Image 1 (tube, rainbow, N blue to C red):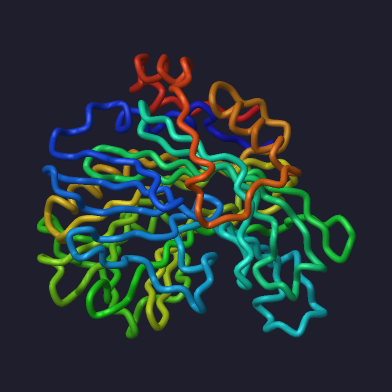
Image 2 (cartoon, rainbow, N blue to C red):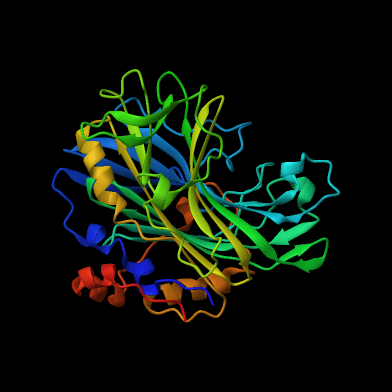
Length: 404
């Protein structure tokens, strides 16, 4: 039996989302031109905005005062399914050896937004809760990244991608994923190995980012950093709890005190599961026009119906300084451990409802679109969630309940 803190996973970020947002910070959610945009502002001045697109991924992230400067890496060939902030899954034990693809592409590879050919994953529902400052997108990614593998490997992973718009312009990204059954050349297969990665590809250019920091000193100066095109490590596999500070930052090394930086907070808590070899690690890489911050979950013996629950925080600022460093450090302890729960786990509260919906969506058709505005549906705050906000939040944060 695998374990997870069910209530904790559902409620860990309530203190931030329920607290009064500072008067200097605000969020706006808009549907414009068929797209959904989340926009933050500080001191009444617009700062950053995000377009929520294919299957609930962040398809665009922009620096508004800097003439809407693009902050995500450009696509490889114009596709809407790559170089976006999303999750991706692969397995080194479910492989189609007969294909002529390079060896690393023979593996099972399912990506939230869709496949390399540009086929977009279906979205099932898009729900906005204004009282909670929360946008939920349910989707069912099901197309192998490389079409050469599509006939040989099939699986559907249903997922919730939740965006919580928090104080200080922090955007929380929570991913709850239900692992689907998998077949290999028509026969049932098993995920003896499964890797889920938070693919976070930032723009690498002379006007955005050219360096990656895994540590900042008290003044906000990078004190553990790498230069793009020179020494950014390629999939180093740093354990989050023992080998990182719980965050990473992309920035401009030539003008970091006066130019935009983006922090990604993944926390320092290891994955909660019963697999002794399961691991939460942080990887990285760079390419001609991108820098990737890649928090990844390596898991073994993952059965159909397992639930994976992971949260990261995006923290953009218009300069890298002591204030940003202090905010990143304060947020590290608020990110819950990712959890892996076995099929048949009994969940409670809102998480039980989420898991039920994920199971029900597996065979639904949905809409394959990068423009989710037509699916945007405002919903009221559930009564149960309101009670959790009012209740003893501190006790919920400290308590860890196990899946059972």
